[in-house]
Amino acid sequence: MNKTTSKPRKRTNLLWVILVVHCALALIYWHFTPYGMPPDEGPHGLYVQSLVEQHKLPVFDPADRGNYEAHQPPLYYVLGAPFYMLGDAMGLDNPAEAVRLLSLILGALSILVVYQAVSAATVSESSLALAAAGFVALLPTHVMLSSSVSNDILSELIFGLGLLVSTNILVRGVSMPRTLAAGAIIGLGLLTKTTCLLIAPIILAAFLFIALRARPVHKLAFLHFIIAALTALVIGGWWLVRNYALYGDPFAASQFALAFGHTAKPEYWLSRGFSIGQYWLLVIAWTFCSFFGVFGHMKVFMPTWFYLALAVLTLVVKAGVVRLRAGFVEGSTEVRRDVLALYTMLVVLVAASFVVFNTQYFQAQGRYLYPAILPFAVYWALGIRKAFPKSMEQWTSLIVMAVPLAAQIMALLTMGTEFR
Image 1 (tube, rainbow, N blue to C red):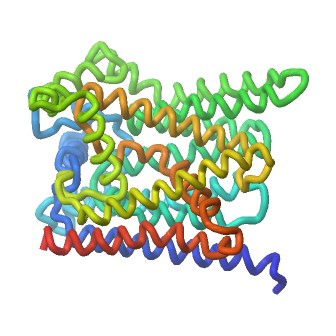
Image 2: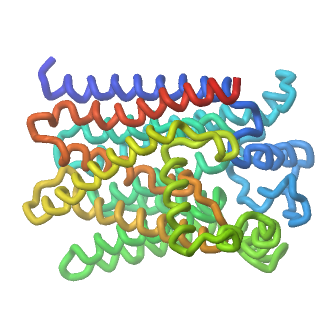
């Protein structure tokens, strides 16, 4: 066997090791964490229960404080129904707990998609994809989502698939299979979570890049995007029509506002003497901590010194990203520039959505940034590589994964103390 074929095989084997470790960690989290303890798990489980017992989609009632997720699109819960029935057949006290197995499967698939998407984006043979997949797989909050009942993990997979198909469009050009796949992903996103709409402009940008790259302008790319948009509406448009018929709002946003009017808002903190600046510092700090890992009902923190160490490492990564940006001028980067542009666009869109959300409600939860977890993982890996000397390049993948692994160990120690 020559070196050309041995390296990809070795990386494939390491990828499977990463997946097995991720699944094992998710099962450990499952064991440590009582059902209903992860954020919003109880209401997500009630949605699945309603589907199984009533054989129809629930109608959202803002007065029902226990089932406040009933406005969510149905895909995750429909997929979860067989797992609920399995839990019922096994005699679980709460059959919805078995839906955690669906999340575990989706979490593992999202890691595979990260690996495939980053592999497609690299301009040369590289271990970057493995490092990015390892970062996501070992991140405590990602493992928590993979071991709890929540549509967030399916949303993350949808965004990963959107970036994968967008990357393939940029690398291989437009084709009907890729166009239909893009439309299907947007349509399935409509049936997963409203946030998934943010993948549509990313896919549109990929088509635009293709269109503008050609001389004369590649008009066929615009036609392909129209086909993708129509495909998305065929798959997910009925949900928007249903919402409009029921609530007078295709996204049920007005109903969400009625149901969550009692939750903490910026005014809560401002009335207690916080300035606007202090409020946003609180949002940033809490979001940073929960991006890596805050457990229970977002109240069980790892030691403060550990978050401070992560903050220092993040600054090191930021310095590396600055060097990466300088590398654009020199033409030295492992990832295609057009793909990096899509990554940056998605990070900006997700961050802007998060900021707007926190101007209305206090929801400083790092998981709301996970639609952009793939770009975050790539920039983390590239930042580490640029921050360390080139002579250490062969070790940087291990360093990239060592950080979330250390967080994982600390998370398990924390949960073992709090939830035993």
